Length: 383
Image (cartoon, rainbow, N blue to C red):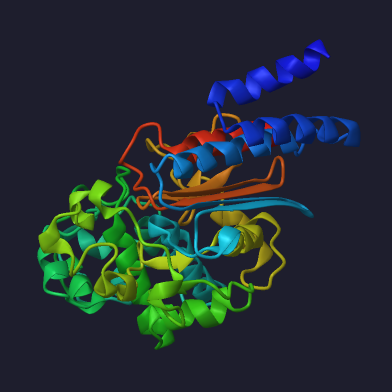
């Protein structure tokens, strides 16, 4: 009995969730212990993670959120004030990047490009100075020297310019360093990798991803841009807490901020996808348990290893890798991504666990963000 009280206080009281979750945590924890797999998929710990998000939504800090945790055939899915519960659709921001990278890998598997190819081979106008030495792999691992955003970013969005205009300017924007010598997070490299996919395939990237990745994986509520989705189906972000390039809640930015029809339909290859927790879990599972359906098994496995040996930050192909990108409780093999709209996802091969947390509260709005506290609890519950 004394141990039971300690169990409650060590997990629940620390995060002060609602009383209903205290009761479910105790019941869930005892059930998990009696079932014999508490250390692998601790229901009590998952309830505590859910309670963090529930409290954030109930207090008004977060407008809507979802939590998806999969481990083999076990699933823990919760929705908090969203339009479709655990299957609510969010703007996932930079979780889009590994999806765009997957499109590149599909073409690599077909022999239509190599990651070691110079980008200029497919983008002949990308040939000034050190640009001609940038490889496709460097575009995907944030080592190309390209900037994160164009200096003209806000002006382009204010004018409702298409993706093609961003591509045009990215071809000549100044590099920040010699390719391959440093790591610096950059969205424009992902943009140019997407342009390569479009030129080789002859299809717009949203169409290519839908046909070659989303539909085969059963990701029926996912699209780059809006696709078949409708504005009234998707969650709106709390843009008042967002970064300047997201509008920052300024009334003059309403025509181009994260919630505007322009941006929701824009389909930024670096951050414009919409998806759900379960759909992102399906995507991560295609790397955690590759079957050859989307990518060759060896291609999927190679994508989640560190390609930035000797540089400051490990990266896979499109993915962050290592526990610093998710939770210290995860293994060195964990891979995933975060998004500035308040999203997070990871998969850990050591525990065969997938975690997806989607919220409407921008990542930079508060420290620590509720997504991070919930993620830490999930990682502890499956360690």
